[in-house]
Length: 120
Image (cartoon, rainbow, N blue to C red; front, top):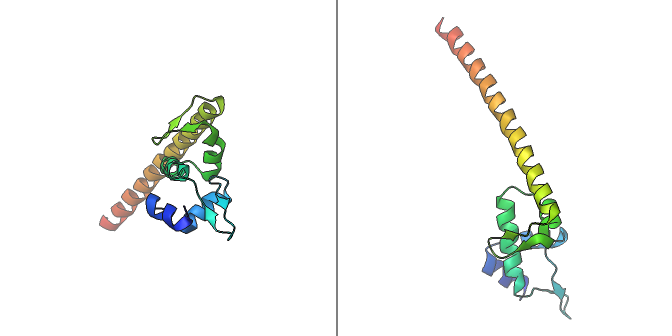
């Protein structure tokens, strides 16, 4: 199938599909005319990419995990690199959450102090 059909089937615009290709996540064949030609498995691959992106993984991380990805969910095989990457990503999210909680608390303190000055 050509890129336009893959785009229609997946809901992902052609520009994004070319980006996934540039990142090594999709590998189309080239026809005699030079057009990208995707196999039917590309629909599943794009669905996997989208769901992993929705989980907050980068395209680089997805590329690293791709050999361990199966199914539409997608399911992740328990490869050592899968567990290591997911644990590291979760730890990083925990750090970001802690930073955001601290920032929120500091801003609330600034807001309260400013409101007290305005009332006083």
